[in-house]
Amino acid sequence: MLGRTANDLFWMSRYIERAENIARLLEVGYRIALLPREGAGQDDEWRSTLRSAGCEEGYLAKYGAYTTRDVVNFMLFDADNPSSVYSSLATARRNARAQRTALTREMWESLNSAWIAYSSKDVGALSSNALPPLFDWIKERSALFRGALLNTILRNDTFYFNQLGTFLERADNTARILDVKYYVLLPHNELVGGEIDSAQWAAILRSVSAHRSYRWVYRDSYKPWRIADYLILNRQMPRSLRSCYEEIVAALVELARFYGGSDEGCQSLAHETLRLLEESDMNAIFQSGLHEFLAEFIARNNHLASEISATYHFAD
Image (cartoon, rainbow, N blue to C red; front, side):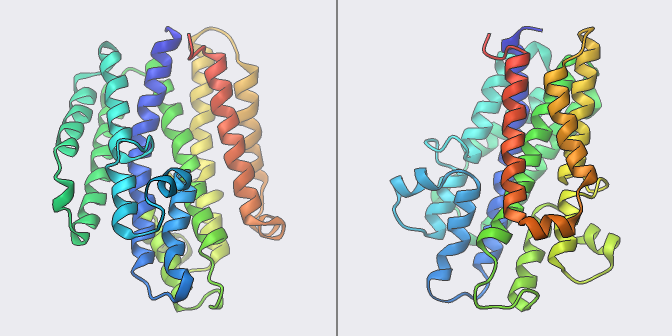
């Protein structure tokens, strides 16, 4: 496969996953924004959402102040924001169109129809009450594409480059959502475990579709260390960091096998990160600092993406 083709497939899946993840990140901010807060804390939820998405600088340059309407427009519909849902779907569709022959009909139609429907939405007529259904719609369209991918495509290099894009982006998002809560939104005037704190953790779990499954696994109230353990180390949770890296390692192994060789660089980096997650303990993570752990993980994840790009000549 040409490096340009691999690049387009990898980033197509990354951007589709990113569109879903931006919706999930906004859902966290939106739910937490509805909670009672006082003073300067009223802006914290949107500041942290933009910071975690890597969009704070661009937003402030354009709007200057934090308002729900401006943040939502910037993250959902602003074509000048390369990480907005609008830009993510546009880029994913452009990459898919460039590699149309590598996709199945179901994959192309699910993505193309999502773009047509989303790009025709009337932004001015969007009320705050319409946001939760819109978040759900974005997640459903991402799931539709993902289902088409899993059920119709050959398990060849096309599939594995898509897998890498999906799970690198998903791991990055889960780490960022956790960082939103624990590093920026941890209450300053409220004891951990209080009413507001518990509502924030519930919003985090719902944003990654883990609210009910958390109760199923732990049968317990919201405890920060249990939730962090669930979203970082629990391999049964499909959006956890460990689960994502098991998929990443498997895809890299299959790519090396498909091309009849081995890639020690990418595989060793991915195996090292997976081993770190397998051997980590939440008590040790909390003692050394959850934010520091997540920041290091995000850096590792970005480094792996760069190594994959170099190894498979994405720039060629």
